[in-house]
Every structure is written in C-alpha cells, then in structure tokens.
Image (cartoon, rainbow, N blue to C red):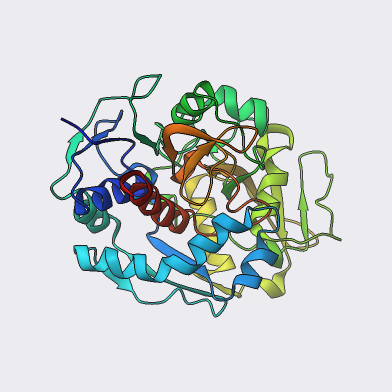
Amino acid sequence: MTDLIVAGSGMAGLAAAARARELGARVVVLEKAGAVGGSMRLSSGVIWRYRDFDLFREQCPEGDPRLQRVVHERLDQDLDWLASLGAVVVDASTGNPLTVGRRFDTRSLCEALANGLDLRVSSPVASPAPRPCILATGGFQADTWLVREWISAEPLFLRSNGGSQGDGLRIGLAAGGVYSVGMDQFYGRAMPAVESLPVSDWVASAQLYAKHAMAIENASGHRFDEDVDWAELRVVQWIARQRGGRAWFVVPPDALGTETRYGTIADQIERARQLGAAVEQRDQGLAVEVRAAITQTLGGLRVDADGRVLRGDGSRVDGLWAAGGDVGGVATGGYMSNLAAALVIGKRAAESVLA
C-alpha cells in the first residue's frame, strides 16, 4: 500500500519523497523520463537565498511573501539536511556578498536524495492524479503551446530538460487549482545565437554581461530601454519577445577585459564565436548575436505556504500539493534560486501531507 505519490524526480520531487520516507511514509515516485534528476541534474548546482529578506522582497516584489518567507527561513537547515544525506558540497559559498548558499555536485545530489526510494522511470502520472499527491513535474518551459500562449510566440532555446511540459500544471488546474501570478515570466539566459548547443556548454557559454554592454538591440536596430534595470533576467525576457528571439550585445572596448564567472567578457564572446554565433566589429565596440534561452517558467499553480494547491476562493484542493516548477509566485518580478524554492517547498509539502 502507498501513502504518497510524488510526480517528478527533480529537486522538488526527490526532496519531497526523501523527506516523506524519512518520516515513515511509503512513497512512490513517478518519473516520465528514463532517468531521474530533471533540470536539477543539468544545473550548476548552486542553491542560495538572499542574505536579507527585505532584499529578497526588493528583488522579487511580485512574489507571494508567505512563500518567500518560508524559503528564506528554512533554506539553511535544508542545505544542512542535503549534506547530511551525502550530497557533496563543492563550494561552501556563492561568491556573492548579497546571497548565502552552497554549490553541490548535482550527480551526488540526485544519488543522495534518491537513495532507497521507490523510483519508477518512464512512468508519467495520470490525470486525475491519485491522492495524496505532490506535483513536481518541472514547469512548462518545454511545452511549445504553453510557452507561445503565455511567454512568447518566438522560438526560444530550451535550456532545460525536455520533460517539463506542464503536466503538473494541467493536472492541478483540472482538479480545481488556479494559475499563480507571473505566468508570462521565466528564468533564462542570453545564449550564443546558434541553433543547438550541447548540454555541456549550457552553463559556461551563457553570455552574462548585459550590464556592461553599451547597447542591446534587436535585428531592426530597436534598443532595449536604457532607462530601466539592465538585469540579466529582464534583458533575456525582452530578447525573448523580439523577432526570432534574438538580439545583439554591443560591448565597448574598455569593458572586454572585465572578469566574469567564466573568464573575461572577451573570453565569453570568443566562446560564443567558437560555438558558431555571429560576432562583428562595430564603431561602438564588439557585437555578438545572442538568443533567449528558457530554463524555468516562474508562473504555475497557486499554493499556500505548505505547498497545498489552492482554488480561486483560497480554499485547498483536497489531497493535492505542488512544488518546484509546478508552483508559481515565488520568484515573480525578479530572480532567485529556483533550486532553493524547490528544495524548501518540496520538503514542506511532504511534511504537510504527513502532518
């Protein structure tokens, strides 16, 4: 007999299942892909929070304060929990004075969380889902129709696993749940403007220097508004809605030597050139063509602080929880660690099911 079904085996699903098993439940994890890990396995493994909650609110002003408070207050102990399970920490800090967190080896994360679980791969969850159930299927960034409906009609590069097709969102809505805020928002990166990239290049080839560009313009020469914040996330969301989901970064000569996480800006542009992106010299500086890549949708199901799926009137859908990419309203309006929200809300949902 099964006490709990968890749909999805990324960070949220594995954290929920591991915590439920730790509490004595008989858990079955259903994963429609042929392997576990979801987008977590493809990530850099950095899990973090803002050092100060007021800064969190400032950076993600449209998010649900209840969900944000849970993530902020519980993350540190949940990172300790991951380490206690055997997940390997490869860097004990983020390197950013505004944030607190750790970088984990993603393979060890998957192995530590999955240890001892009843994991059934190539087994998608059916609709309606069995109850109780925690939906953790990873958002809808790989579903072309949903992305066109909510985010952009332009072709976006998928920088995520191909299984995140809105399964949990559809199941939750069919059960009476409602959309969260921020359905038109996503987390992504400006990547070299090429048709395809191997997964091994997804992290290091990201063109993360928008704030150093003197111009960001689309194919018609229309420029990103210089009077607004040039944060990487806002820039990539703008690029996503330009023709072809593409734009140009124009970098002045005196910025090319600026150090980034993956070498200088000149190094990053050269990496883009080697991968096949167009790079050209202009009067203003060096220009490189980039395209918008979508990693994680920020909208999803509306949930309470325990991860319970909510109806439009605020009441709970009986027996149904959600976590990870199936939840919206945490990072809305800005940028935060999606792995952090998945970890905390996934564990919290499991505890709520068994309370």
